[in-house]
Image (cartoon, rainbow, N blue to C red; front, side, top):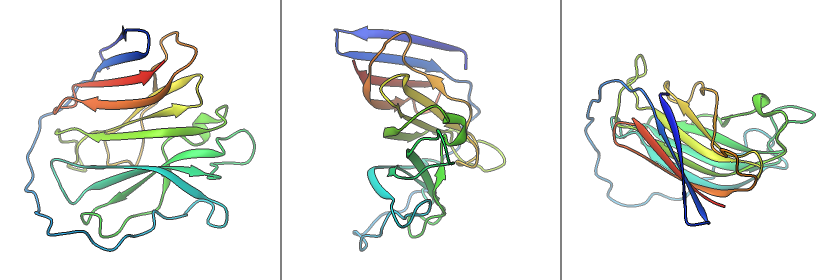
Length: 195
């Protein structure tokens, strides 16, 4: 990352601009949907007896429409015993256009040991290409409680691993509900947050 810039718009929204180094882009062919399939449960992979899933958000890789990514807020989905988030943002991936999904994984599990709960996930995928997966960079923003607040995570390998988070509070002591936007190339990510 080359820079982080914070702009406060009025007194209610904070906008964070993050420049990111990217590789070249490749375009994939798109499928045309003919209708909606029957609904399918988001899964309860972490704590099937007690997990409740909220706030789903979905993104499709613009270079490969078979790659569909989903985030959910998993209530009672904890990465470890002790001071891990008891409500965690979970990630899952489809490589067949959403017909089936792999298991749920933590975007920030044991690394976020001091965070009590996570919520308000947002996900976007850049129109770049990362080797060896041939997939676009995934950008994820969500709240790690109200303080320290919004965090931005990136993955360059289809969600197998996440880079350490960029904290978006920049001195703010309270924020809520990030809205994430990225440039097509992924060279810039913007997040607006309630403040």
